[in-house]
Image (cartoon, rainbow, N blue to C red; front, side, top):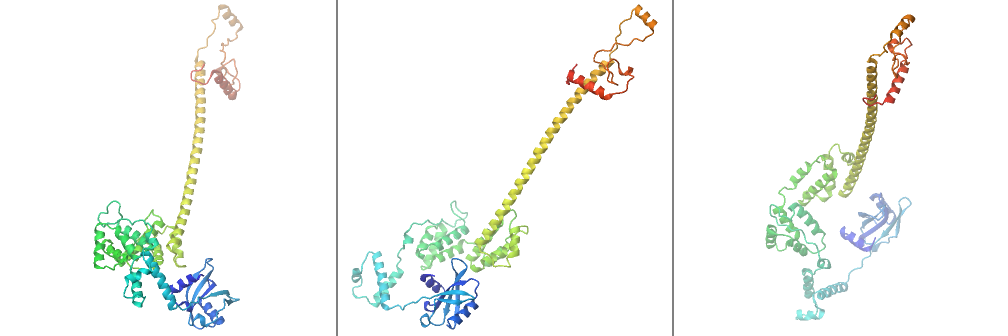
Amino acid sequence: MEVNEIIAWCREKSVELDRVLILSKVPTDCDDRVVYDVLDTVLGIGKCKVLDRHSDETKQYQFILIEIACSISEISIPSEIGGPEVGPWYTQVVHVAAETPKQREEEFQSKLISFLQKEGKSLADIPSVVSPAPDLNTKLVDAINSLVQTCHVASSEERVGYRRLRPFSGFIPTPPGEDEYEVWVEQTTHILEEWQCSDNIKKQRLVECLRGPAADIVRFEKTGNPTATFSDYLSVLESTFGTTEDAADLMLKFGALTRMRRKKLSAYILRLDRMLHSMLRKKGIEYSALNHLRMRQIVRGALSSDLVAMRLRMTHKLCAPPSFNELMKEVREEENIANSRSSLQSKVAVSVVSSAKKESSANTNLADSEVEKLKKEIRGLKNEVSRLSAAAKEPVTHDRPTMHSLSATAESKTPIRPVIKAGVFCYRCGEDGHLKRDCNNEENLRKVNQRLIRMRQSSGNFSGAQ
């Protein structure tokens, strides 16, 4: 760990640099009791206290900040401690030398020269400003130091161009081009907190975006409180244009907030987080309680049929509540998986229905073609039967016999057979030369059907064929 990081860490924990010891390469699962045992066994430094822990880049080991009772310079600390059971740990200390008056004077002179250069002056111009005291004395040092602290010197960040805040006037209804107060104040607060500039610059940029009643409210606040900060400006705007609900009312409203049907769980989480930040702005909750309250309300207000919410219900008591980023990432991944699965099922169902329709259409077309073919055959058979029936009903013509033939017939006593037309056959046996009423042969319907089919094919199967 770098020295500047250790110094910032010690300032954060309000501990002196000469009374801290940094342990590195310590496993993340090592508790405080093991650390105390190792320090007492190896170093014997007496009373000590574990102040804080930071994970390293690998997330497998951690740095431990330890406060000891005595000064670092009074004891001898090896560079490596530990044992076979816990592994090697590395120690790191910061030796801070006492600051001398000469060093303080040099630091002041550097600040003074920097200030004079920015104002276009030099050290030679100081006697003309302070003539009674040509030498630097204590009063002059205090006066210039106070001047440096009170005068605003624009930093490089403040001189860089910036994007102005969105305008806000406070008129009702909201004019075109402006946002409602809740939307505006949420965005403005976030941007002002992110800007790395002085409070005066933040106040100036805030006043630039105000119009109408909102500008009047801030001007009244500045008149009554000349030392007001940008937070005071936002507070008076909140009192004038913000919601009249206090933190308790918002908490009740938050507890009654449930997920609407046909809305995703991620959208419900966004609504919860927006209301949580409203309560945080009203100072109704602490920042450390956001994750717990969010998870508790998700478990209560989500739909019982939601699979993602069901899994959160089963696991939220077994582990610490996740942060907003972790929770939103997990929920959106589950929703994407569910959407992909449902879209795949719908595509499969559509393809199955389409295949069934195609098969049904093919079967219908095949059946229709078969029916038409049969209908044509039936019509042809009906026509053929009608034609044969008409031919059968025609009278049989005989040659008129002469007297000679009659006498010959009478003498021979042989019957005269009628003349049969060509193409007429017996409907009983299928043979030519006689009709069914004169047939004495055995019935042969198969041969009759074959003779009928041949006659239909030769004459055609359309209506009226001869």
